Image (cartoon, rainbow, N blue to C red; front, side):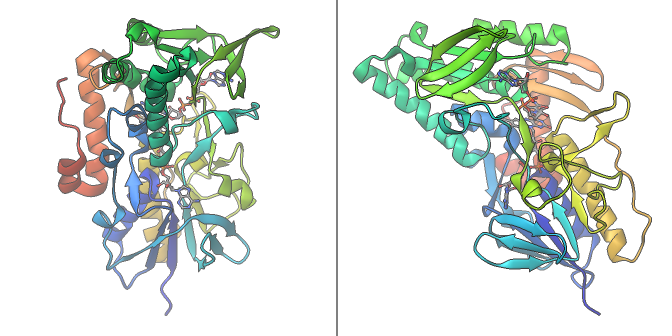
Length: 405
Ligand code: FAD
Ligand code: NAD
């Protein structure tokens, strides 16, 4: 009898949790498992703000996919998925190949959501992958170096769009890195301007106000200027246009604009005609796409409703990894001919937001934490993600051990 073929798209948190659990639960005679990813490495999306600010090297935030998969059970295909043909059950790959599947797991992560704001695609950077992180760091350093030649003040202005978790974590890293760059490029720290523009009436909307206050005060001490209740309306070659209210617009001249104001699902979801909201699929309780019994969608491509407040859970690595575990066990059941698939329940362990590698804020198991304790917890969470996928060897190789900084 032909073995069922499981194709997993994306080797991020969701995809690698699925594959590493599947390879434990299924023998090589039970199913054919194929993992497709753009690169031959996985990157820790949750550490990209550090690579973007240059506080971690790009190499530190990634590892070889081959180091965590069992090649006797999993075929790895390095290619970019462009579309899923649902009718014929095929994935179209960029290099021209087609991959047929019996079961598909879409775990391709998110893409920046620009809400159609003019110029953002062209003139703003986003913290999306290792390449964009490298680009941001290199770009800022180039601006600092060039300032010494032409003295244009806008070279030393960095705008961060959005004071969500990504924006705040990036600002925390910048706060620590800018003094080092100033020293390296002989620049007076006072000349550097970091402006964070947030449309909502507060930074980190929805998060504990006392912790938000702690974070903004800390970042302000590191020379971050917050423009709260102010929205980015346009990005231009010179900087951005912001507005407080309808007519009150202002131009901020800046050589660096980093858009960190939201994510949507991977474009392949829309391209493939899967029912979605902003590229994210509101999945069934067993994590299948509505009406598609052979397609599971997890991570940033999926949308799971928090029934308590009737709103979607924010897309996080935490939820993507838990979904990966459940999808693996549901797939193992299907392969074994069982039909009683389990439903997904999110076990929210809390949220910690780093503010550089020496400070953080968070709510963990319902308790508020700040400072070194919170920073310690953030690093433990980062290390746990490595451990869950690659065990002790990966944790020892890539883990964060400056725990009490
Ligand atoms: P990802 O982990 O992003 O992986 C997607 C994979 O798919 C990547 O390997 C990518 O290369 C690959 N891929 C993409 N498109 C294609 C294609 N067409 N073909 C082939 N391969 C493709 N969440 C937390 O829980 N805690 C945090 O502290 C946290 N910090 C964050 C910090 C930053 C700076 C950012 C940006 C996000 C953070 N998040 C955090 C959110 C978290 O990173 C995401 O929710 C999580 O990465 C989603 O996991 P995923 O498996 O869906 O996708
Ligand atoms: P987000 O959607 O959480 O925050 C985006 C912010 O941008 C919001 O505060 C929003 O009001 C603001 N914004 C939107 N449009 C704007 C505009 N035109 N001008 C100015 N501000 C605007 O996005 P994110 O911070 O990128 O986070 C994405 C996901 O990743 C979230 O689910 C988040 O929880 C998760 N994440 C978690 C962590 C962590 O747990 N430490 C860190 C980073 C990201």
